[in-house]
Length: 117
Image 1 (cartoon, one colour):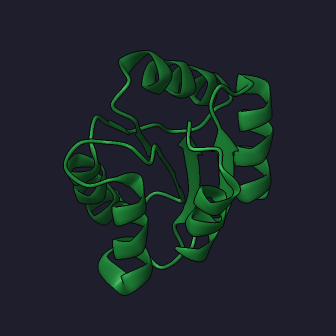
Image 2 (image 1 turned 135 degrees about the vertical axis):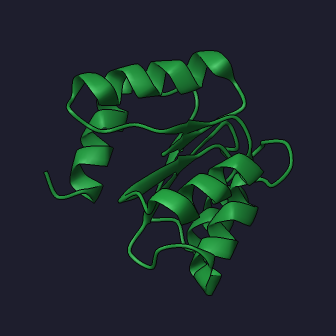
């Protein structure tokens, strides 16, 4: 699951992961992402923090509070780069945190690592 309100970033990440053999679903906002995650139970959700409706952190907190699959890993992909913001992401239960701008190759490596490939 890839959730980002920026069409270009969402499409780039989806393209890269699709080419690596991953099954992809996308969402444009946090509400759509949470609905898709609870419906389809993906192994991994890549969430932008700043999205309309629910933020990526809101979605993450709801997942960790039991609203979605227990075993869904979450990677936050965001422009929020201050130490306090990174710490808040991990404190909320993120499995990884990637700061924009990012290397698509590095993102793929981190996805592979999170999913044990």
